[in-house]
Length: 158
Image: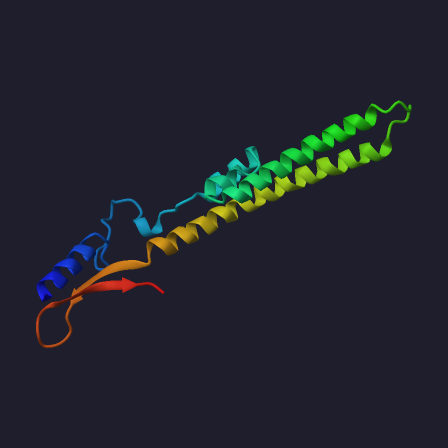
């Protein structure tokens, strides 16, 4: 029974990075420090297409809401403004034109909010990824005391 338990523990710990291991000097950044989603890329995508930075970061519902909020605000506002200009009166319907301008402003505001929040969405995705990937790690270290040996086990992050 001891042999089976030790073999299972050894198999589990061999698949993970051990705490005693260090990266070679010329190797790239270790997996624990790699960025899962780049905030600059999320901000660029959110600037070009509203909501795309959130979709890139994994916040799909929020990205879709930002996209539709921007498109409906700008498109609906332009439509209201155009309808207000088609009034049979010479002065046009000032209420529809004013509502159209307000909706275009709302759409642009949603777009700017999406653009500003996209890097934070990437940071949230990075934190979530780091927390999920570092929950369990293997531990091998020399045993303390007069007898030679090693301590093998699993470390769980709380």
